[in-house]
Image 1 (cartoon, one colour):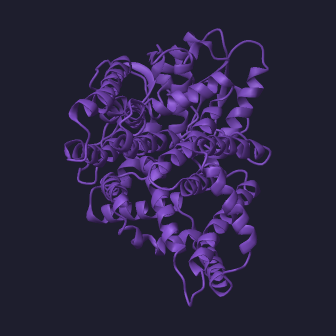
Image 2 (tube, helix red, strand yellow):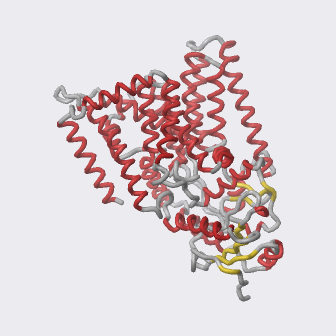
Image 3 (tube, helix red, strand yellow):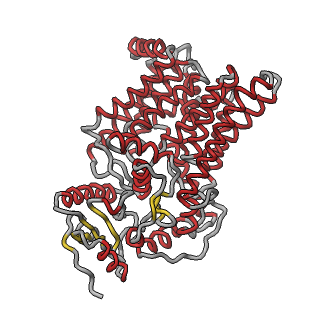
Length: 557
């Protein structure tokens, strides 16, 4: 890993030295491309639409190399259950009579059988499922994210630079990134952030009802995708909006009240009502989030770095014991050393997702952005949301998704400053900015090559889990060809890795052709077999043979 990073840094240094030594290299070709993009960017709606279509087209063209991804993580299977639930016209499913045999990670079994996550990603995947495959929802939401970033940036800077920001996001997040090639999410919260911030300068300049509605929509998406991070993200926006409303440059109160405050308030009231209704359908309590219910039911570990460990909890199966009382508790004990470790993990995780090694010349110019008064709110957003992210124990790149548009806005603004840099009257800044974009294209191509050469490790940090997803699909295809319905009983070994979970089902368990259940070694197994007496029962032991199933035989007592 570190050797590869050193190689990339060496390449960046060499490319930058060449750019400084011969800043006119490729000048004619670069000028033609920049002029073409500048003319295109002046047609703002066309630029937004073209980024959307290009993102979809490029990823579809890569399907022979990058196939439709399979779920490899607990969270992904939970989101897919949510999507299937929504696609069947429900917000939640009734608790299954045999729920103990189906109890699995990041899915609530009581009081309803439902995903624990906010619903925005589920709605995107449900749209994809209706269109033929849940991943279509990922594809469309990623493309919408890139288009929304262009639209947001058009309100903050000249249109040609806004287009550049969308292109950078597309190359970095919408081709090889796990955001595009998994079901974890990220794009929905990024769309929410872009709509919220993109509406702000438009509200200030034109006071149109539609811009207030768009801001409300962005806040609604944030509240239903990353509630905590979205709330923190909205705080600076709310302060900026209130200062403007109370300022002398603001239009008369009757104008802002009817065109800004009322439409925005209406959307927020509807959003709050929906969240309460969704919570009630899933948890039975309008004020209890599904994720909060799951934390109370399964976690004895801190969510925030100032919290302390609680006594271990008892679970219904060995895999939950190993995961919640083993891996989760070992991950964070609340000590100063743990805080430093998880903070370092964030320092590594977030820049590696949103930046690329070739962006170093742009980052050097980033301090110049601090002088831009118009960019101060974006700087405040990064500082505020960054603090919030560091207060949470866990760290994944899509936790920072609301900040996506802000990150690329600051990168583009730093690029504008970089292009003004001259050395000995030579346009080295322009050459370095072009080199950064070229290096991003090269990094994207290299990552694509790496994924193609390592098919067992394309979308997950664990090749075993990615391999397991492929094996589960093949087993289900094999069993679907058998007459009648099938039941697969999963028997784990005592040293099974709980991250490699196989027991996941969709919304209508009883109607599934193939149902997966957990062997518990108790009377519950007999109840399960009696309940599914009309099914052929198979035994699957992933720790012994993860490729095949065989007729089920109960374990010796």
